[in-house]
Length: 285
Length: 284
Image (cartoon, rainbow over all chains, first blue to last red):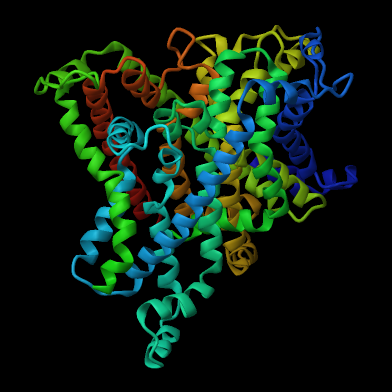
């Protein structure tokens, strides 16, 4: 910090530069973060001749769709995209319904076993993924979920993180509104749907965004449980495709563009929501 | 019973997908099993072998090296970037967008992109080195560089998250606090040391725990960049268990490895929480 704030603090430097010295840090950083993605998009429109040229080029000489054509012809990329959309949609719905219900129950209701249930639920975040891989695979194969999309979305239907997040949010709401609704004869479910949920939009948006990111980008669960190409998600499809096309970068980058651009475009359009959501999880400690 | 009607489905599913399989994994860990032939009970033998498996301890070492590189740098860089992004200067929204965007890309896509960018032959990083007159590097294909390169890739993808959280925390620091310190004669550096840093403590603990979990469970990046290579130099804990279970079908031993490491990470997490508690006490 000392070296960073130094130039900004010294007035002599400020007079030398016609702009804030922070630009000297932020401009290269911004390029560092964005240029690889720019290159990903540019390469997806290159011919393999352009890619193999020495020295390598950043800008394609001609705009070629061969990467995308190759991908469409040699893989089930559109099917994988559809699968991913289905998996993410179901995951988001599951998260919104199950986490808000459970979070509300833990925040507002008194029932036997509440403390124990909540404690057990929160304790599960300590169980690491490597411990779950083998039994989850076995469980899925006993339940007949192997090689179905369910193997990809069942692990994302709810989460301890989501329930905890919703509980914390509901605890921060004033209880008077709900009491008034109950006095007016509203049942528990009615109060929850009509009074509480409309107030919970920011928390629900956070939950939806995190579930979207997590389920869309998930690799482990579909990788271990899905071996039939038709049921791959984008992430599994691309990594498997990568295994056989190590240096066909125009194909791989075209696949990367299809897998990442929906979320990147969504992020740029709804940046305010995204950033607020991420910050939300950090502050609600 | 309305309480259980609300909380039951979510709680049962969470427990059914974690505690139930965790208990099952323990039973499996005391057997020898390839998933096809009936499992054979071997008692604690798998656990004895865990202690003597050099490949496993290599994987543990790689994971700890990665964690030790990744967590402090993501906290320091995240904080520095957050401070830069909290300045009220022109283009700040553009800068914020640029720095957060990689966080949205999946680790798998990031890994595939990185194996292109760091490709010794076609990659643009070597091209950059050539332009400034430095010798080309093997990066992901060099056993001595691979962990550092994977750490850099992970930072590229994750730093946006740390930065957003710090940015929000910085904006939450009451202005009065900073003004009061300035009135009392504190310079920028002292304000940072005695006002900003203590105010960020809780967020730092959250970030440290979160990023430690991320680093200890690193799998996707390894899978898409090196598959544990070259010469197993980037094999991590999760990747090793994945290989044991799904490449060589050693379910029993794989589960024992997972359990041994679970115990290890528990001890580390508890140590970290105790340490952060003690640090808090010292600060007052």
